[in-house]
Image (cartoon, rainbow, N blue to C red):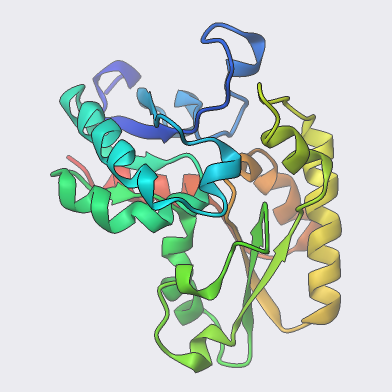
Amino acid sequence: MTLQTRTAIGILELDEGLPTDGPSRIPRQGSLLNPATFDRPIFTEMVVGATAEVVIPGDPSLEQACVRSARRLVKRGAGAIVGDCGFLIRHQAAVSAAVNVPVAMSSLLLIPALLQQLAPAQKLAVITADAKHCSEDLFGLESPADRARVVVGGIEGGEYVRNAIARPLVRVSIDTIERELAACITRLRAEHPEIGVLLFECTGFAVVTGALRSSTKLPIYDITDLCKLTIGAVA
């Protein structure tokens, strides 16, 4: 089966203020927006008003915009819907209720399953663009004991986040992303040596997942892993 005939992935894209044909729109290797990451076509629909500075802290008014964009993607032939920011998990329920295809708005959906993979004494570390807004109500966990096994580290204040909220977005180098994430992971592991797995909240981190798996020697999950699982189950 060729890429063109495989079921397409529909992505709810943030409003980054970029021209449609600019160099910053070219998907990087391993990124969520690169069809080669999944060996299948990708359709995107920008969610009106979904700038990073709005999506990260959350805004209930975005919900209907997400729903409208998801419905357009399904009409275009998307076999699954994915969000281009982990904080879009806030709209998971609304979007999944509005369309008749699988919906995976955020890698944070993996948290309950990943905890089950770990020994009880181990912890899961969520690495996020902004730890201030990555609160435990986004983790899908009811048990206080399970919630205590999730630790959060963020790179807020760094170059990556500063450029992500700029208008238009300014693309940072892959080296910068890797350096900022590596520093965050090192700090978090020093505080919590029992960390057994890492989960990347931000979709932009996927371009360095492979490199950081090698350097940290830890399992790392990101949005592309959830996306592959989801679309792989669609006929």
